[in-house]
Image 1 (cartoon, rainbow, N blue to C red):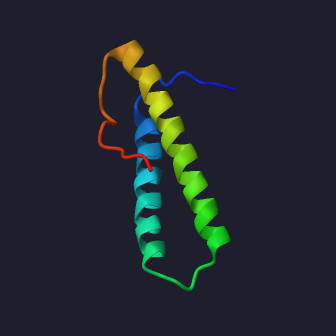
Image 2 (image 1 turned 120 degrees about the vertical axis):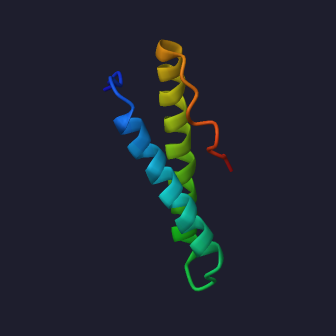
Image 3 (image 1 turned 45 degrees about the vertical axis):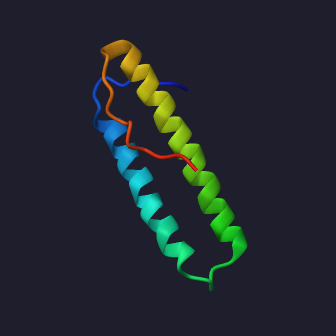
Length: 75
């Protein structure tokens, strides 16, 4: 199911989640004790969420001419 965002609140919340995962990725990179499966799952989730947020923002930009998520980096 797809919902049109009336406000940027949900999109901003999702962007915050991406930033949290970015911090988690940095922490994991410095910890060799974690297994490869966890690192792989986290990376897949990060890439998926990043793509979804970019897609949602693109929809929002088409409707409202906003550019607010240009700082998100992809891996």
